[in-house]
Image (cartoon, rainbow, N blue to C red; front, side, top):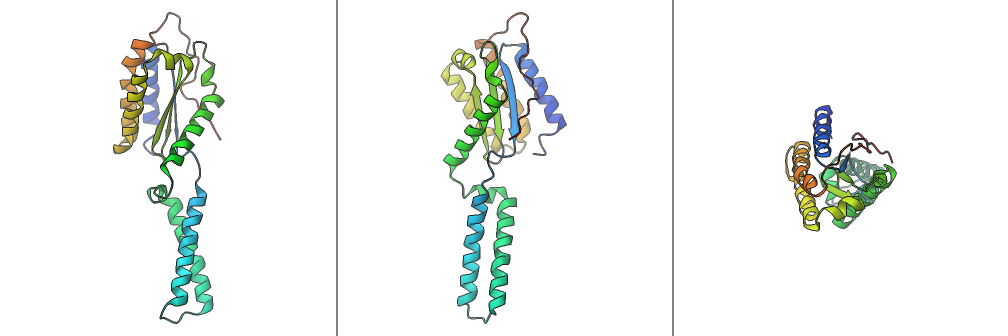
Length: 207
């Protein structure tokens, strides 16, 4: 999450302000480290490592004392558990992709509801929810925005935002894709006079 520093926040708010000045849409962007703890995955992997370690020690051709078998088995569990918890790419390999996607959508919809994004007068709030561990960007438009912009534009937007995780600088790639949305929103959700900013750009939701 180091890429999402104060400099990123400044650029993000400038980008959102630019989009909202040129359209009626209300943009909210939330970046989270993960959309679930998945701790049971680490426990399963560590338990498997513990079983394999115990089996190897018991049937090894080397003589190993009972107390050492017990000790090394526990140590293997702790080490593998910590490695799995700390090394995220390794842990992600053992989680079903559908589960990752589902968790991001659940958290994204919770943010949408809890943050009051659905309460704009014209229903033109759009949430860009970024979940780093799952490598997913969930875009959730309110009813007004969803019906104003053609489906193919939303589909292209979703596809383009998923590509940011293949970039080294994910934060900059996210800003770039967000800027690309400016003309789309300006075209289909044009601005009106005396438009009021109904949603805070620095909205933060705790779970």
